Image (cartoon, rainbow, N blue to C red; front, top):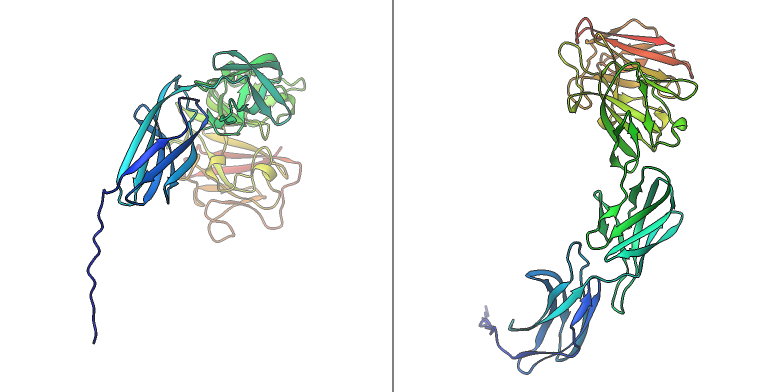
Length: 430
């Protein structure tokens, strides 16, 4: 057997003589610029490794680029100056760090003057048209036009200076954010001539006037297509909706509202607090009973609320908004008082004619529910599942050989006067 061994080679650290020579003067730049630098690097003793350019705002490193320096010579690169909000004109530091293969370093730092770019204009970009936003003050820009009450678009800033970059301002996490082209949801109380504005220092934009209100309570924005209001409603009172210009085209839920031929709306539910969500995509109001600041739940004495989760049902149309097993879409039955709850469903529109599989729950979500032993019904259309008859316990189905008549309205009423474990379901054509 022949064996050999080799002594470990010892590596010597921190030797050599790395040197930096700045070949291009850097004294000033704009936020949002790309600073170009030219550097001569050398080491007469040890091979070089890397050159780093680092940008500091005070003590915070905000940008860094690394260049491989395989040999002595001239190198060029660029480093981006972040365009951050709320940072005024001032000084920054650019530091160059040269390192050779023995990890010996040399550094040089230079102070530079930074200023906000003075954009000549901005551009509001919408799906159908672009609008020029003129400068109205330091960092302040506005477009004054005949706008609709809702305008969605992002804002683009042009390149300023030879090393500048164009920039976009969009909407992220309910705030104006640099680098996004997601639409900013501008809104005004009315359509007409008004200004849309942006401050490029603070990112403050306007207007964000939620123009929608119900009985004087202004809706708050949930997302681009959903706005909610929470308020006390009184049975029989007229309901006033402001700001929704195409309200005549909306579906009005007959469980909670009645609408006369002239478009006047009246509240049908029992007196109480409700969350009303305006769904602008599907053009209808989601109405949900509340208890204090939370959605209502069924109480042990049979008061509160009852909810539907499951398949074959959905408002305003099951074809476009089926509840399914998504608890966020659970339907709140209208409380009638006296521990009775009702939902109005139209066959082939808000409920399937022959294939349903939903059940009643105590809350908007998983938890308490009405099992097969908790509900009875004597109607000849709908049956209650027991786990053995084609439906899970408590789930509703249409009886074999039966169908709901397309176009006909059915009232589903759950009566809890005998107790939550002795619910009685009636299904009556209207």
